[in-house]
Image 1 (cartoon, one colour):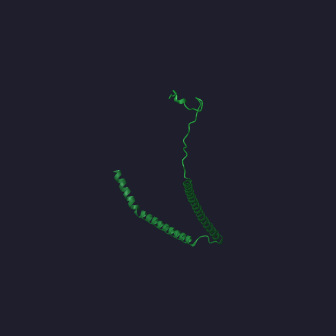
Image 2 (tube, helix red, strand yellow):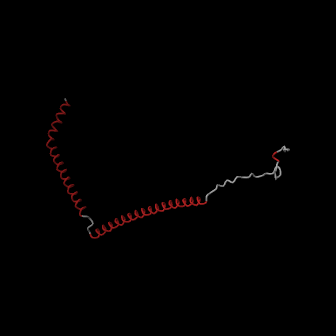
Image 3 (tube, one colour):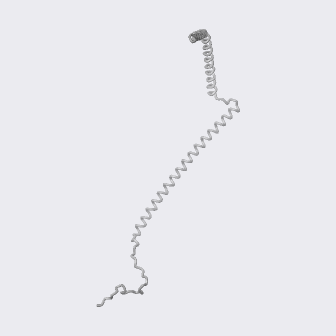
Length: 149
């Protein structure tokens, strides 16, 4: 048996120097179709659950926003009603509440009482000054005599 000297040139169906693509292995994985369907179904369920959670959260947010808007609206209505009541009081001539007028009268009374007390103390201090004036003048003369010596 005679062997050829160049093993590369054996059994080639193409010319030497021509490019030949390599045969590739089949790398696609073998997939069980039933398992693939189950996995896709589970994934869809998971996505639906997430979607439901997101929808519930946005619905709650809308409800909270609606509630805060309603409470703000009620507060504004109360303020407007108070303004209307005050306007009606001004039209009828009874604008000042009884509580406010009572407190203001008490405050004025105590202020007047305090002013009278301060006036009395001031007059009393002036009388004391007049009583002690002669002693003050005497001690001033004594001080001048000591410093003059």
